[in-house]
Figure 1: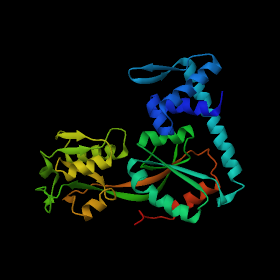
Figure 2 (figure 1 turned 90 degrees about the vertical axis):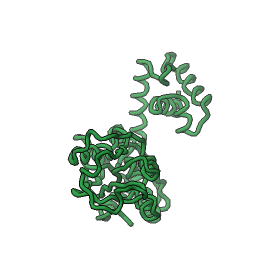
Figure 3 (figure 1 turned 135 degrees about the horizontal axis):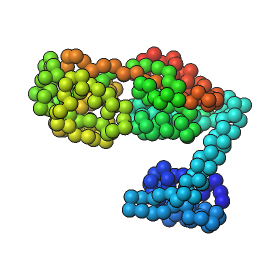
Figure 4 (figure 1 turned 45 degrees about the vertical axis):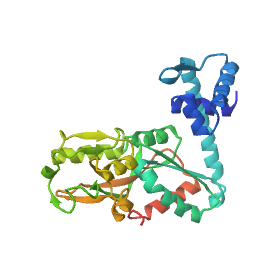
Length: 295
């Protein structure tokens, strides 16, 4: 039994199958299958069953995955404590962000941090709100950027605000007018997938505007919403920073609606019991100095 085999098994579980694990680990699918098969041979039990819905762990597999995650968490703790003796001359920074923040904010922040600490290995992990919180709870990521308040057992520190805007294609008859929510009746509403922080806020805004019963499409990710809105398939509520380039290029227009969508808070999320390494402490200090979304 090896750590590599355990890592592959956990990847299969998290990806929901062998092909997904192979893609996430940059391995061939036969190599992933071979690692799991060798681990099963070492332990003498079946760990994974293939089903029509993907890979599913056996009861023995559940036990092994739980222990594997505990082992990886101990190893990460060891690395973090040793990194405390290296300062910013080495070490690793892994920060997670929800889809909007991980795509449009974190690359800028990590680029700025990397210019100050070029010897620190930086990684960004992106997922919906639920995924980011689970990574932090499980110890797979120490720092995360989320919208508003996370689960009760996670610490959240407000950092900056983000404005939501309603966008449509440049040919929309609503463009250039002062609108009320009543003017949006009959418009197709383009919504993010369930589980995202943006979707939750979209639902709240539509409820406040009295548009819950209007036609809607659910699309995955902000990029898909932008493209759909630009093609005239409907209107979408998105972060001002997600759409800034398209609005500047004339591919999207921001609609003026009164009352305007509310601002939302971007928060730093972490577990209170995790000790930060010097790179993590330096990154947090940089976040606290922001004040506003970097230009």
